[in-house]
Amino acid sequence: MLRFLRRRFLFFFFTYLISSLTIFFLLRVLPGDPARVIAGGREATEEQVSEIREKLGLNASLPEQYLTWVSDFLRGDWGETIAFRGADNRDLILERTRNSARLAAVALLLSVPTSLALGVIAGLSENKLPDVIISLLTLSVVSLPEFVTGLFLVNIVALRWGRSALAESLGWWFPASSAVPATASFSEMLPALWLPAFAATLVMLAYISRLTRAGVIEELKRDYVRTAALKGIAWRAVIWRHVLRNALLPTITVIAISISWMISGLVVIEFVFGFPGLGSLLIAAIERRDLLLVQAIVMVTVTIILFSNLFADMAYALLNPRVSLE
Amino acid sequence: MRSSQITRSFVSLFRTLLRQPQSALGTILVLFFFALALFGAQLAPYPNPNDQSHDVRLSPTLDLARLQLGEHPFGTDRLGRDVYSRVILGANSIFRIAGLGTLISVILGSALGLFMGYHGGWVDEILGRIIDALLAIPALLLALVLVGIIRNLDFEAGSWQAGLADNVVLLVISVLYIPIVARVARSTTLDIKTREFVAAAEIRGESQAYIIFREILPSVIPSLVVEASLRFSYAIFLVASLGFLGFGARPPSPDWGLMVNENRGGFYQLTPWALEFPAVAIALLVIAVNLMSDGIRRAVQKGS
Image (cartoon, rainbow over all chains, first blue to last red):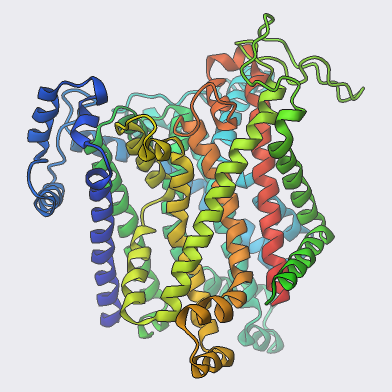
């Protein structure tokens, strides 16, 4: 167990090192002058460029710059934004991360139970009608780009159906735009979260349910299932007590991996719905050439992904002692 | 494996794809879009995607009941451009960028993976760990950052860097997918490396390049074909998403993702068809490529 944990931690730090180096060097080694990019390209005057170069410490050597940047990041000093005047990068990013986390939480709440159920149903009825229907659904409708489903939800579900008699009789319908104030509380935000969360659910649904299906099918072929069935244990009990318990164990890892998957999806979804999350902040930061903000956002994202992977590994090792022996 | 053998196995793969209804549907649709990409300029009624008519915001004249296309089958957008022609012409860029990007990443990635897997040792260990670490950054995020940076750099017109900046999405796809392909090629190579024919070649004293490309590569090709089809479907997805986010083709290019972005919001109320037709085209292509690559995966797994 200890050896397993040590290896995971080593990998965690190594990955962190490599990804931070990648993010750093993307901005410093590519041909062109980052200070000029921030200053506004060709139109910027020499003074503006050198002022920014001074401010960012671009005159120091590359290793020095990297170390300064990493230690600043770890200490929580993420600089000031250029794009959003006056704001501190850290306050801005933390606020937006909280909003994205709310969206992700609603999406996970919708998608995990649904996709587990779909995956189990498909796995138990391998190659029979329910399985064929579910895999066709997950393969086609659900593999659509997020912006296509997102725009469908905005234009058809929220706007067109929102004016129908059904919506009138309900007295409440989903808002078409999720452009709520970034500082709103969770309960204020919740009505605006449903549609983007549903779009994110579709992204995850295919992924989790297909892996769950594979897990169930594999588990059903094990010897102990046959033994239990031959012993006369009710099939229902075999499924619930043995097969599902073992088949769903890897799902913890799957959900952790799909968090990285979902972050990509959320960037597009937040853009479509105008939701004030981390993804829409990233797009705004890139468009406004705020490279420091971009760096900080990507580092925060990588941190979230690495921590969720680490926790998943540890949870998995605790639940399945065999893993840590390998 | 000779080239004639490779051709023959591709023909048999194609036949297998057409036998299953799901993969047959996908393959035929992909071929249909590919034909649009190749002959779009000849098929489109308005070969210049930016031709404007004086009658703006015309509704679609497509009549499926009577099988008539009419003057503007998919209507015209708010600038009076023929949406039908733009959708046909847009197939070219998505196939070119996603296809070439996949090709480049598969060639370079499998070369890297074969080398890592065959060489083994510390080279493999270090490169493998770097690849694992790089994959911790979500692909779309890395793509957005790369496109954003390269686009904003100052290049002299006509220089090689400016040429790269014009093909930035193609470049980004190739770079993003090299490590992913390399990982697949590496793990397959590790498996093949232990076979007897590789040991025989080593005893014969063949060079490393000969063993990698003539002995190991042919056995790695099936898993590379599966990976390439998977990469292609992700590449299509990524090109469309980047276009939609405004990080791909620039206006007034008839890129599907860009067309969807340009016609959403308030414009959707005026010309819903200008958004719906390119969106349906993207959706159909993504579904078709997914069905096809799923079929390829099944066929190859069954064959091995």
